[in-house]
Length: 295
Length: 182
Image (tube, rainbow over all chains, first blue to last red; front, top):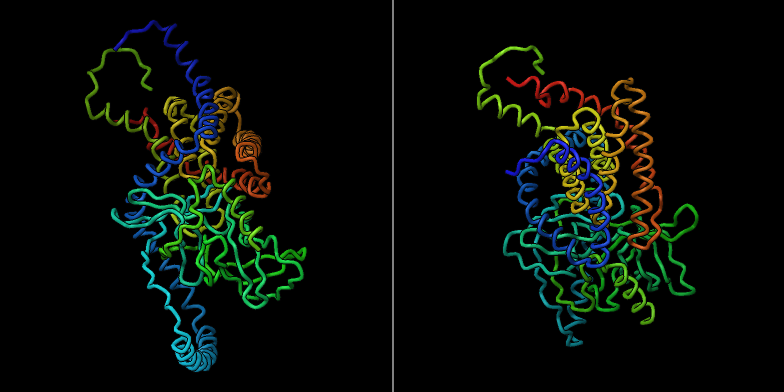
């Protein structure tokens, strides 16, 4: 090791902090100029962290499970009554669905309907909240040879959660539909009006570019539309909700605050693959533009 | 530290390892808790808690154990924070380094004053840092974010500081104290 005089060492020590501050400014510029470099670093870090999180996840799950068990025991009686009612209603809907299914099969066979291809999906565990203060995304832990690609759709048990934006060797990131940069072409199920679902970082994303003359009802179901070939059509996103200042919002069906497991579907759509997230804002604008002009 | 003059036997390897681990303790536990706070616990405002935690830790250790938290480690923790989140890289690094610099600058005065003053100073630091983060994020992504997230971040940092500090004071006197190495 080089022996330095005390003065030289002190001078060096005093210089470290300013030099590092300049470095951090340079990092910001670098991230702005070459968005791919921080993205690669991010993927590498996620790949390194995902197995660690997978290990920590087991005790965390136990804690969560215990908390849920206590809550459930407390609400047992009320839940039972509610479930009995719901069961009655569902039995009725089951009969309706069976009848419709049979009718649908007959109609399809008469029309020589080409059946939809069987979809393949992988299921992955959400291991970390990866958004930070100004973004909404989650980190998934994947097997080393999972065949997930960017642009695939992630769903939880009840609806669309988001899209895969980054894929590493053992991890993937999903940009949630509530993120500021998320733009999804949607269709209102009853009024058949098209719109763009835009995230705001708040729990309820809003509807943009709604077709003129459309008056969606409160509680109307919002599904994905096949516009721009970015999403398969007909996936449930949520329900329409009028906000406090009469703003059209969508309450997501997926439990985005407590995502635990998501399914990632490969719909084989190549319409618009999201670029790595540094360039995402521009692409989101382009997507909104494309579907806006398509209508 | 042992200040009595006189000749003593050379300290053993175990002692040196103990001292080293005590020096490494502040940065290590800051990082570990930071990683744990990113796990999906389902806590509301987890991202803000994460940021509040790092700010409080950097501030606290820069005040009370600056030797255990050199600027290079602050840089590393900031980079980790930035890469774990989704925003532009470098913002967390810059802000943590500035918090570190401010804490070092006013170290003399702050370590001599009571807890209330240190807390008040932290509230000022957290306000500046949250505002700075909002401005820089908006500027670098060219997008006006609703300031509510930043305000929430500041409020949580200011409000959680006493709890975090209580925990850190215990560490400061216990496992992070090199003078207690055996």
